[in-house]
Length: 108
Image (cartoon, rainbow, N blue to C red):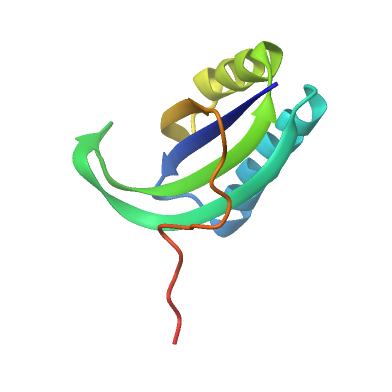
């Protein structure tokens, strides 16, 4: 199995309940297709550099997981038909960086 990072950009007008349901949906999808979820990061509502489907902002959700071809194909299939997701990106790695979280909320 290989290591992957998958970043999902969801619509800006989703409710908190809908966001939690998306996170849960894709986490369970990874686990159920012989994958191993390593970490889920919620980066929050961020500005997009260019408008995507009339949206200027999006909720970013970042998954770090271990999986195979079956896991990737299932994720791709589900994302394509999910209307609440406007963009996604999956990247393969030799080793995952689980220590650094680049978009962590800094609450003082």
